[in-house]
Image (cartoon, rainbow, N blue to C red; front, side, top):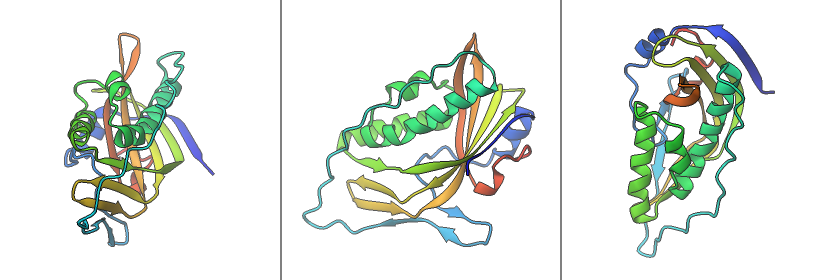
Length: 203
């Protein structure tokens, strides 16, 4: 059952210090679990006949109908932005991704840069997932709300120029920092953390 938590208070300064060591490389990373085991990416050796399969025909997710700038609307934006990620990785279309991202969002820009590179070769990614839990926090500092989305990520397949790369299923806490800019909610921060950090005030 999906769980949702809202209206917890925190400061963005605490979040920023806790994530100082995170990278902005946006490909699906290897992750060390709480048991100490590691899951990672396997690359199949391309055959002499390997070609990148055609990208799937997909429609962009519907933009959220935001009615205000409170934490509930911030959640709607965060959920939509997460839905955009598989779409961008599969199609290379970054128009909506860029529309809702602030220039300061390093991960957001990394996604755009990788999409541009993939567009040159036709490479693309299949990134299926399911949301298991949601948590929202009001914040002070670089953004006004922090939204945590606990996701169950299925087998990820990246069809690149060097062959098929597969990343084993796993769980992540997707953290989205949302900022109110002159009455418009925009994404200031986006990253994926370990699942056990979901809903934790102090990261």
